[in-house]
Length: 49
Image 1 (cartoon, rainbow, N blue to C red):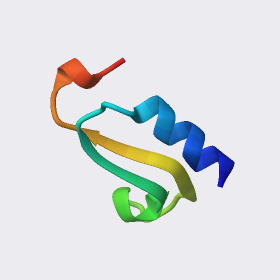
Image 2 (cartoon, helix red, strand yellow):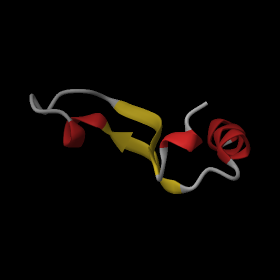
Image 3 (tube, helix red, strand yellow):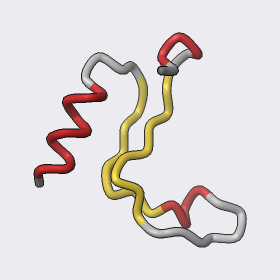
């Protein structure tokens, strides 16, 4: 999967949990939303770009 490789390259070095093709319905109160290419939970504010 080309997109996953490209996203992985961009996120290299980011500390945190990374989920690929994650259903956003599992993370919203209304249980709606399609799949995110990548969902990242960073470890600290310093990881924000």
